[in-house]
Length: 384
Image (cartoon, rainbow, N blue to C red; front, side, top):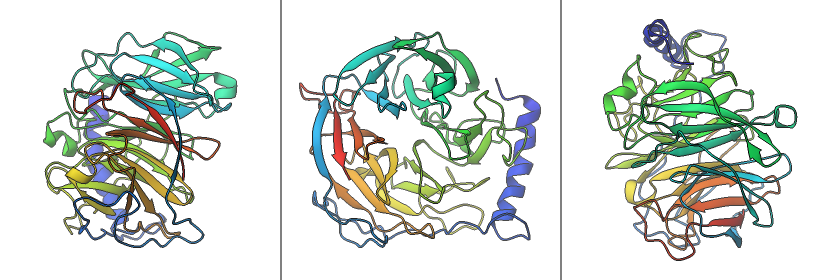
């Protein structure tokens, strides 16, 4: 399914209307989410145990996460991860195009290879999401870059064999960099898709482009009911390159986003929200745009994966080579972050919360920007 010209033309007016609602116009919509940017005076090198600051989440632990084990070694740029009902992880490799099944004992099975994936730069086979109805439909959803576009496809998993994929949503602009690629099913049963602006910043504000957005679609690829524009898949806009999505215990959507030269961001995502790129990087205190909840200097984060566990958000840092923990209060405010695993495993790409309560953290040292060891790339399990 490809976005139609009519759908694109309708997008701008509907998003402006949605922003007006969240800014305080009379409506039956819930009150707007808090917009609080945390202090940015983090040290150049936080200690492995914590960065300065405090957390304010009732009942959440404040101790250091425990590295349980290195579950798997010798992978090639593992990018996406999600879990089947039996606890087996489905992991994608960006460059090889392989879709892997990895059980709790670390046994790796190749489920299939996505032949249409065209790896270059930051592109290739990226995100994966397991259908919420997997027990009945046996379906996996994948985000990939082809020779012409970025797209979402789905394939059926019969035993340990993945069927040929079929297109769910195509026509998403693709580039050498900034292809987004994280996909995840929300508590509402709809599929959320992050797209990058492909190195063309103006696309993030372009109502006729699916680039630089968070999309919300049905499993069939149609715009999900309740979107700002009922004829468009766009949920929010003004994003540079989102690669992390997570929902907290209250069902609020959070997204981690790459900055340019100053600030990486953690955003609380609102329906119809405009997050400012390229007009604003970090906090702009402009009522037309949603400020981030937390910002980092780009050398401390370059955030990719995001997960929610134990009352905290957990965010992987690529250039920052660390795992960030951010407490979230009941009213949706993020506390000052703390850093763990600093430079212990190199570049960290993905954080996924497993059914048993552990975090699966993947490295990305073989992506052309890291310094791989003979063991890379790895999946490390962490007890939060």
